[in-house]
Amino acid sequence: MPPEKSPVARTIKRRISLGELREYALTPARVAEDVLTASNSVLLPHGTELASLVSSVDDLEKVLRRWGIFSIPIVIHNEVDIRELEAMLKAAETNLAVVDPELARQTVEQVENVYDRIAKGTCGPEDISQLAMQGRNLAKEVAQAPQVMLCLGKVRGWDEYTYVHSLNVALLGGFLASRLFPDQPEIVERLSMGGILHDLGKALVPKEVLNKPGPLTDEEFAIMKKHPVYGEELAIANGVADEGVLSVIAGHHERYGGKGYPKGLAKDEIRIEARISAVADVFDALTAKRVYKEPMESRAAVSLMIDNMSTHFDPVVVRILLVSIGLYPPGTAVELSDGSMGVVVGARDRDLLRPEVLLQIDHMGRKVEEMKIVDLSLNQSLFVQRPLQDVGKIAF
Ligand SMILES: [Fe+2]
Image (cartoon, rainbow, N blue to C red; front, side, top):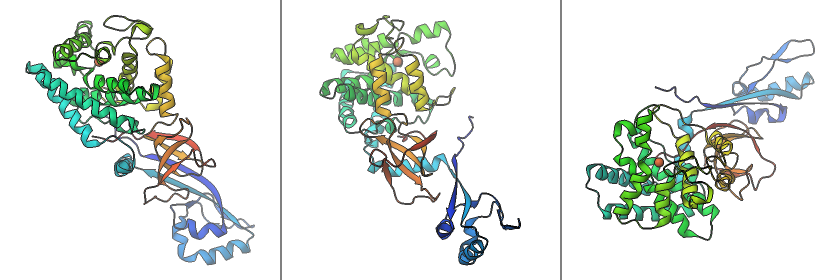
């Protein structure tokens, strides 16, 4: 079993004036260093909890003033359990423009069903057309869901990876297409439909190969590499005729530099829909947790993809991914410049550095009870001090 994720933690140090003592006595602040008299006697030992002084603040203030001390150094250390942050995101779900979780769950189930039928040989055109319809519904949702990154669901069991992954590729592919082609909803739709169907051919790949928890042998990889072709054939046989949708199924493993499969197409030979889906496919695979690997943080995944731009991906599409999710992708826990802490939930105006943050701990280290989203693009005095950790996504 992989180790549990450690809590998100941060420590702030600051000096507070005596006038602020009363307020800070209600926070988890501690005295950062011994507070001494002129003759070096300890008035307040380091580590003292300010909360323990709450009933004697007035007397303490007088004593400190008498010694000519007008401020004291404090330290506030906060630790937040990842599960707590996840619960907070979940609670905020209705206030965030995320994809309807019910629609997401239904889609995952439907993908699973269709795969099952294909494997058993009982799949018909109506199953595929229903699934494609679901893709169309998703396309509408995606267009209205700037926080799409939070909707890239988590996989519960490893058998479900392919199904949830299909949904994620549909969502992210559709989202990238909507950013690249804001006036062409038909491209968004092709990406959403194609995303749902893109790994259809895997239903014909033996489960032992598909779910092997580790690297494949050359032989196994050769079988695996057939899935785009199998998928395209299955889709055509079941009535999918749109060239753009088919290109996603057949071409999502083609590489921009020409070294992909099945055809080894390069650059413009690969349809734009397939180029977009390739980016969505790899990004989701990198950031997914699998039996044999921990998920990569979104920021690290984007950097890795930038490194592989031009050999693997269309640089224009990768740039849109970066611009859309910013330097602090939704789902990243961050510390703000005033010491407060929260989770990035979205970005406005394509400002890489100024996302929207759902606050969890305020600037004094207190837990924020009411849901509060700070839009850094509107609050120029506040900025992201540093990213803390990837909290992740909303589970379906
Ligand atoms: Fe694939």
